[in-house]
Length: 226
Image 1 (tube, rainbow, N blue to C red):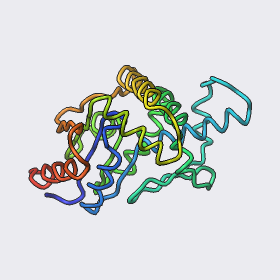
Image 2 (cartoon, one colour):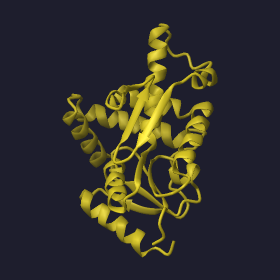
Image 3 (spheres, rainbow, N blue to C red):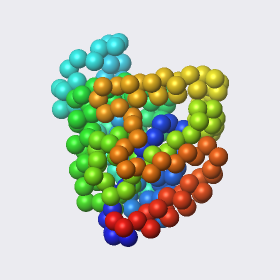
């Protein structure tokens, strides 16, 4: 295996991308790049701006908003997001921010802004990028691509557990409904929809534990000819 590969992991929420991507990156000594955290960071900043001006549902002036945005991302074993110098890494994990991030990801200005930053961050390789368009749009020529998936019930169960551990109480049926909406939004958007990237290795994680998924991916990576 060559050093400094660009490895992408895409898939819907609840498929296990984040945990797996961190573990694969750690095993390889690579940086883990959580592209979803970048969208959530922008969403959090946008929500704060609207709240400050008491504006609801206004998505105009996005280019100017991005031009003035003081946001910074640091990637290592985890993603750290700074807005105006403040660490907002935990605040961006709220379900409301996730839904807004999905909506903003359909905005061309936002997607172009973050795609440029993602490419700049990962261009030298030695990275594992996780998201929804990392292998299809951000790095279509990545050395290795994976697409993780799982059935909706399993994904809803995982997401519900994740939120519960963070103290965010919500019924599993509500979590599943929000996930289904997110799936529709991500798959049906005109700009960079969620798809299985060309040449990606598809893995259904429904019946697999995390270590089993990681081991399988590492086998593919080490046995590849790139």
